[in-house]
Each structure stands twice: as structure tokens, then as C-alpha cells.
Length: 147
Image 1: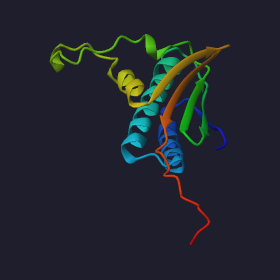
Image 2: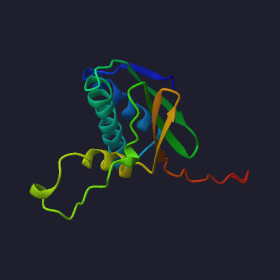
Image 3: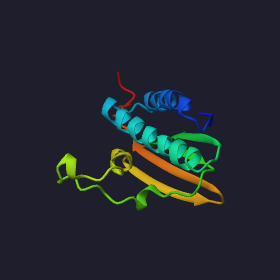
């Protein structure tokens, strides 16, 4: 798939979500896996837009690179916002009652745990949030040459 480049604004979230669902369908992901991926990508994209760009007084694009192999679907969100590694966000204490939990961090936790693998890289002045989803196994067909 060609990279998707959208402005780093909230209006782009719907386009990003549609792209994720299209890539998930093309990769043959099951509904739950596709939902988890969309939730995670949406959470990270929202954080890029709100905190990386808007709150920092910056503007820029979000680029999504999509790679489908026999075994995996990989989506990479790249932006030029200020550096932010989501894996440094403390894991929320899910044992606390809702009213005692601090605000923030749950979305990032869901994003990272919903993917089969999540990585963050800072390359030059770009953030890369990489989501990897395993594709369902395709049953091998028997081809003995006999009918």
C-alpha cells in the first residue's frame, strides 16, 4: 500500500481509521485484531495531534506506512512532533477503583497491549510508532497431483 499522508489535525482521525480498517481487511485480520489495531493507532494518532503538535504549538503531518507480509501486518505512524516514547508511559494500576486512578496513560496502555508487538523509534527529528499484527495462518493446501 502507498503511504498515507494526512495533516496532523483531529479531522484526519477518520481517514486514518479507514486506512487501518482497509489494511486490516487486506491482511485478513480477524475482527477483534482489526479493532484492537484501530483502537491503538487511533490513540497514538490522537496523542500525536493533541500533544505532539497542538499543545506544543507545532503543525505537521502524520504518515502511515503499511507493510503486509505472509505473516504480519505492520503499520508505522511517523510524525515530526516533539519526541515522545509511549513505552515510557507508566502502566496504569488497573486494580485501583476508577475514582482513584490518575487521569491519562490508559489509552497508551491499550495501544501497546492491543498490538502483537509495539515499538517506538526516534529517527532524526521523526517519531515512529510501529504496530505489528500477526496474520491468521493460511491452511496449507495439499497438492499431490492426483484427482
